[in-house]
Length: 485
Image (cartoon, rainbow, N blue to C red; front, side, top):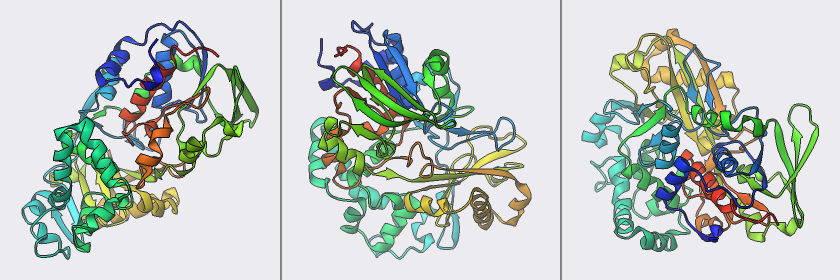
C-alpha cells in the first residue's frame, strides 16, 4: 500500500479520480466530515463511493460553504455570487466536475476595453488610459510616467516569473527562500514612488495585498498571466455544490456547529450544537476530516490538548484570512450596455472600488443585477460597519457619481454579504502574510492523530474553488486505505 500521506497526486491523477473515483477501500471506515463546502463534499462523494460510511456535519442550513449564490432579493432568474464568481480556464479540476455534472457555463468577461476608470476625480475608459497612462494624474516620477499600473508591476514581477518558468519545480523554492519575509508593499517600495504604488494598488486591486506575502501575490500573477479566459456557471455558482446533493443528502446533518474534538486511542468524537434548538450532539467514528477554515476552528476545543502539535495549533491561531464584502444592486434595465459596457468592470477609488457587470444575459431586455461593490481587507471592513440598507444606499450613491443621477430611477433592489461577519467562515479566504508560507504552510494539511484536514487553506490555491476541490481529492486519497486503528 502506498504511503498516501507522503504522495503528491498529479493534476492528471486527480482528474482521473474525479472521473472514475477511488478504488474500493479494503478497510471501510466510519468517517466524520466537518463542513459541507466544496472540500467536504468532494471528499465525502469520493469516500462514499469507495465504500466508507460518511457523516457530514454542517453548521449552516445549506451546502456550499463559501460557494454561495443569493437569489431571494432579486427578480426571478436573477442572482449574484457572494463567494466565487469566476473560474480560470486553467482550473481543470473545477471544470472537470462541472462537466461531470453537466452544468451550463458562460464566459465571465473579466475586463473589456470599455471598462470605466474613475480615480482622482477623473473619468476615462481602459482603452484610453492604456494609450495615455498620465491621464489620471498620479504623482509618479519621470521614469514611471507613461506606463500603466500593469506595466509598472510587471517591471518587478516579470523577471521573477521568467525565472520561475525556466524550472518551476526548482525555482519556486529559490524564490520562496529569497522573498519569504517580504510583503508586496516592501518589494514595491524598493522600486517605485509612492504615487506609482498608489496607482498599482488602486487600479490593479492590490491595495488589500500590500501587507500580504509577496509570494502570495506572485502565485496570483502566475494564475492571471496563464489564464486566457474565465467562465462562470450559468444560473449561479452554487449549482456546483448542490450537484452533490442527490448522492449525499442523506449523509448531511445540517445546523450542527462543531464545538469540541476529542481523540481516543481507537476512535474520535465530535461534539456539536444544533444552531436552532441549541441541543448538544455527539458522534463517534474512526476518523474525522475537518474542512472548516482555521479562522473558525480557533473556537473549537481540542482534547487532549497535545493531540494537535504545537505547529498545528500555531497555524490555526495565526493563519491570516482576508475579509471580503460584496454589494449587488438590481436595476430595471442594463443602462451600462447603452454605454457599450458589455460585462467587464469599473475601477474607482470610491468606497465601492470595483464594480462588475453581468456576463450572462448580455443584450437582453428587462432587469439585471450588477455587483456594485467588491472589496477586500480594510476596505471591506469599512462596509461591514454599515447595515445592509446603508451599504446598498452608499453603493448606489457611488454608482450615481459615475453614471449620473438618472440611475436612481433604475433602482429596484439590492443585497450585500460580508464573509468577515459570517460566523461559519470568519473571513473570506486565506492570504499568507510574510513568512507564513514557509513557517505555517508545511504543517497545515498534516494529519493530527485521527484528524485529517482539507479546505482551500490547506493548498496554495487560495480563494478559488480549485483549491477546495484539490484538497478534497487529496484528503480522500489520504484516508481511503488507512486502518481503523
